[in-house]
Length: 136
Length: 394
Image (cartoon, rainbow over all chains, first blue to last red; front, side):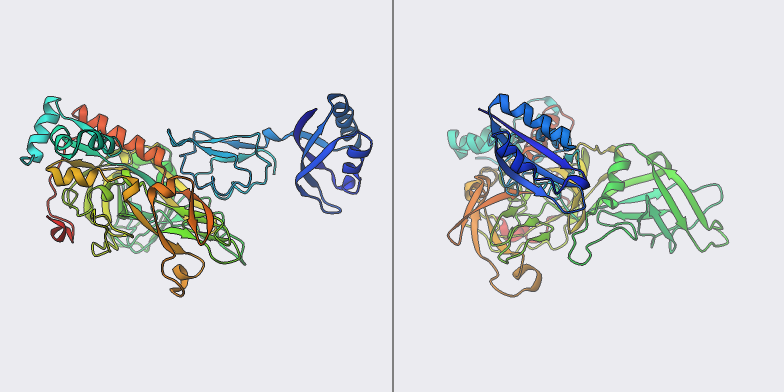
């Protein structure tokens, strides 16, 4: 079993494609939708966690690419700019998945990208602009 | 124990024999060695804080061009941010919260981002960058020039000094939201129904919490300010020594404040940062470190108070704070509880966040300790006490 979190970007003409159905039915994957914005006629984005056999995952990615859906790893989305961060902790209670961890001996805040679902809640909360989003 | 004078301590600084501890280190020292012995062994305790404070700004005196211009009574912006020009021909004041005209502000419930303002102008100058000055004036016989547009930096200014009417708030509210919608405040985003609790103090490292009755911190006290040496110029605005206090002397809510002044040209972007509060505005975060001379045992007792023995009031920012209606205070918590990551309120575990960086406050206190040990920072006696200090004397 392999688990991976990816961002799916749908071009406007593909938002009506039943992509999730295909991933489950044809590719035997478990799909956990972490976040989604899909509007008819507009570009859509979906953060999903895909779990399945290694042998199922790569044909599934091929299917997505063939369909015109861009697949990107989630970790590339949100970046914590350590240089700008002062470890004030304002982001800590705001993140719904607990991606910001406070080390209570050094009092430094670190970012655990494995937990991040790119909900972007932290973006407006960081007064130092220490969180960068590569896709918006 | 015999009392130690500032002069004795400064002599030790000069001879390189001074014993300096941070306000955090000294807590353990007193626990281990006891008050008497610790007071004998320690000469100076360094405090520190790094936190946003809106009541900040800087005075600039801009060098005159060949044909002189009277900015006073005129109009001036720096990178589009309006500055105050109601002074003499070349003096202006840039407030941290000033924002460019036409900048997207809060609108129809949409929170503004406030990406650029006075604090950013100050930060850029401190980082050695130039900003665009644009000015108009009415012109006089002695100052004929009526407009000016030029890129300027510190080299184009005779003086540039930070002058903050209020810093180092001695304690502050813990902000929560009892309503059913999220609110944007100067204490950050407060999620509905007690979704989070935000606080803003360095607690056991905070300068005025370690000298609760202002026995050693007063007008004229030399401090570490934004990377340079600065001074306490006056009590800060809203200074309220009458706030209710715990038995250990520390206030249970916002109390004393300091007006600080320092040479901006010597400050560093490491210790001075512009910040943007979504839905509220621009502000300036600043490192302040104040050394506390251990003049007697009572002073040692004050500086060794820990987060377990410091409390802050919990205030609802959805109703009581903005309107003055409803419950004034929802409770009181210790800083140790706030730092643990959550507090219990109305039967709920509420996660906590802070705007004052404890990691940076520690760095400030450690830095100040180093420069005092190196003999690069000597202590001062206040020229005059802050209001309220007399009542606190034992």
